[in-house]
Amino acid sequence: MNKQQVTVGLGERSYPIVIQPGVLHLVGQDIAARKIAKRFGIISDDYVAALYGDTLLQSLADAGVGAELVTFPRGEASKNLQTIATLASELAGRGFDRGDGLIALGGGVSGDMAGFLASIYMRGIPFVQIPTTLLSQVDSSVGGKTGVDIPEGKNLVGTFYQPQAVYIDPDVLKTLPEKEILGGLAEVIKYGVIWDADFFNFLDRQRGNILALREDAVIPLIARCCEIKAQVVEQDEREGGLRRILNFGHTIGHAVEAASGFSLIHGLAIGIGMRAAADLAVLGGHLAKEEAARIRRLLEEYGLPVIIPSTLDRTAIKQFLLADKKTIGGRVFFVLPEAIGRVRVTDEVDKAHIDEVLDRA
Ligand code: GLY
Image 1 (cartoon, rainbow, N blue to C red):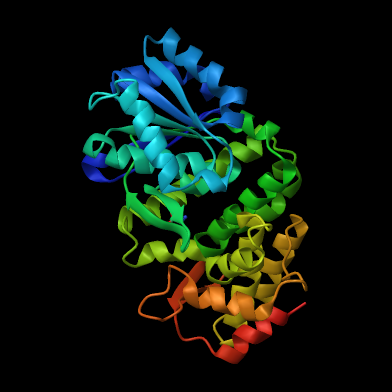
Image 2: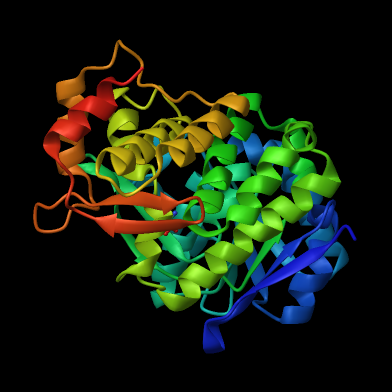
């Protein structure tokens, strides 16, 4: 079966995630049938718009749905309030009103920005996610987090605002740079550690097929990640508690990413953060050494870095740790595995242990 569908169950705001090779060519019919909006602004960066914009426009046109591309320059540097203002003016100038909607076409930057814009344009219009990177397909397009960066930090301004539907086309991964695939795979491994030991084993067994992007491995992989994310979001949409487990690897990972000046891409930094969190859990007596070794081994077998580059300043990493937006009341929270498939969230971590795991080779 080469099509799978997962539902995010949030009562009246429930929505489907459709995972299907070639869905980018077919999506118009489904969007038309759902009667989401009379016309769509497709929010995309110039690079992704050039790759897939025409295909999406054609699919929508074939289904009788009006749509226009509204693009911004590629890259995280665009993810700011100024771009939101520019895009809003563009939509207003083209007469987009409350009956219209947005489609996010692209990776996390497009999804976060289109979602944020949809949540505030005319006090809220519907939007659809069409994620085109592995990271956005398994994580950021699902669950309704939207936002932009400000000079003080990433994603510090944003909303919770759920899409009407998510369409995932695994075929688009074939044009994705290998580093981006690896970054996405770090978040995939995250789901195994935080929630599902069988999925962790699947990732171990199917590594060759997954890295070769074989459909019969990649479709169930994406579907399982979306299912886990849906289950977590259904229980804790606004990150009051459980949803924080999705930040496994992110406490140290974000600090490493920031200390690298973002030259280390997010997913790769998260891989390092997961290894460090597993080691912290062992030092704190929460996790068996062998389990931490299995986590590290799987990351390494996928070709993910697990140690912090020696060029990165440890003091800077620790400063970023304290400045993390997930800090609450000055307390730094860590998601620590208790076993593969189960984690706990705690701020009770020995400072000496943090130094030790940052320096571990
Ligand atoms: N990426 C983590 C979350 O959506 O909560």
